[in-house]
Length: 332
Image (cartoon, rainbow, N blue to C red; front, side, top):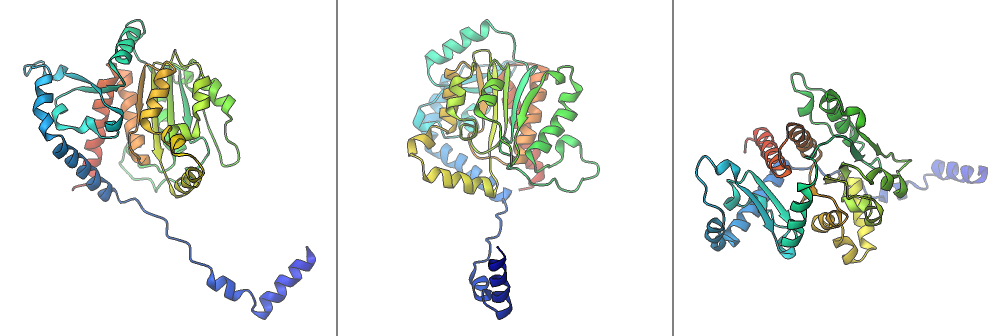
């Protein structure tokens, strides 16, 4: 009101309010991701795991089939890992270094059911993919200045939507099935509703989530349980990307929730829910990721799907290519 404006003007002229401004704490600097520190910590985790399970290496190697040099490239491993050990990076275990494909399942019964079901299905294809990209419009980071001589798919975009558009224009756009891709993204002022997401996910041959935070924190377990997912051959869940605002929002929400509800959104539980809903193969991040890694991994996964092969082989090759790309960028 006019009276309040006059009071503000008088306070400003008299010097009142300056002390309050001076006492306000300075905003905290935005954290910058140290990729070298992340790489060092990952190396330490794998090394500690190797040391812990060293007594089992001999037993594991004996359990693997003995193959000759010509057949070594055909070794595929399926792991039935206990729930309490599922958070460990078993795919990086040295005992499985010669495997061309490594997959996980929950029990021998679920594994057998998948094998029987897949025998009656067509090969995995990204035709008719349904995608969910940055549903809340939280990844607003602008891309860096263009770099001359760097291929489009190697450009380090910093915005999930821009990344996805780059993939669809450079890779998917060159394919005949590009027009069959449908999906949605959100903005700060408009987010897709549960019903819209459920309709999009239902009967999707391939489901792709490319965005921030935990998949079930954004899509919701209720939406997944209502969707018809028996026809879904593949779910690519490239989540767990966090910026400052996403991290703070997630922490604020988690404080008001029970530990059980938070645990229900973890990778193991996410894969279990999607599997129970009928999804044949689930690929998802086990640990927090960064935009560049999700972007590069997705390009390799889509290229592998287009070339053909089992999903285990495609993921294994994509991860190896991802490691080689980031190893070159990090001389250490």
